[in-house]
Amino acid sequence: MNGEEQARRLFSGDCEFIAGAASLEALPDSPLPEIAFVGRSNVGKSSLINALLNRKTLARVSRTPGRTRQINLFRLRDALMLADLPGYGFARVSKAEAARWNELITGYLRTRRNLRRVMLLIDARRGVMESDEQVMALLDEAAMAYQAVLTKSDALKPPAGEHLRAAVAETLGAHPAALPDVLATSAETGAGIPILRQMLAQLSVG
Ligand SMILES: Nc1nc2c(ncn2[C@@H]2O[C@H](COP(=O)(O)OP(=O)(O)O)[C@@H](O)[C@H]2O)c(=O)[nH]1
Ligand SMILES: [Mg+2]
Image 1 (tube, protein in one colour):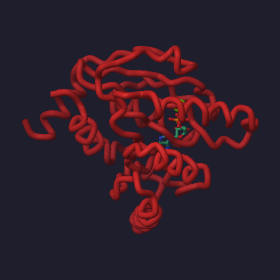
Image 2 (cartoon, protein in one colour; image 1 turned 180 degrees about the vertical axis):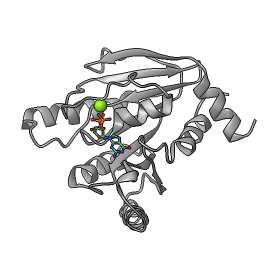
Image 3 (tube, rainbow, N blue to C red; image 1 turned 120 degrees about the vertical axis):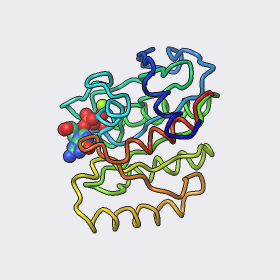
Image 4 (cartoon, rainbow, N blue to C red; image 1 turned 135 degrees about the vertical axis):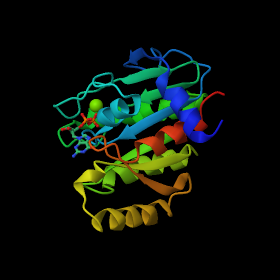
């Protein structure tokens, strides 16, 4: 089976919302390989997951930034888990809330044994922000391989998109756990979605 077929198979099968866990204890164990999606609040994470899964509302697109406070798990076939992690970096969160986010994510990275990769979402309209760099440092520390994914790439006309990709790639070069490539995506136009599906299929069972 080639990558395209593998991806088609994975994403045409059933997809089930498994759990929304507000704490690590509430997160069900899973034997399936898991991919976590991380990014700033409003980065377009829910939209991207919906586009990947070809569902309009599976991962709820929130109009209010910073709403999702839990880890949402989606199971694709008996092949892969997607974990939608709470967003970070929203200006209005209190210090206590930010600390709670850090604790949840650090704990998740430390204990989630089936975690295979993190997709780190970067808003193409904003580029890498300080909070993104902080999360990169956290992932480096956990030695967890992560793939940078630009969201809302439709917002940038060429050559701005290519310039941003190069700039992000340069930033990643200073981060040991980062994979070198930057994938540009848009939930709006579907750009990059097939490639992202193939990346995920490669990490799935079978
Ligand atoms: N132009 C554009 N806007 C997007 C895209 N994806 C998401 N958005 C917008 O960005 C905002 C936040 O999206 P959402 O998926 O809720 O972000 P989340 O907070 O990271 O889950 C919404 O207003 C979306 O309509 C995209 O690919 N292109
Ligand atoms: Mg969301």
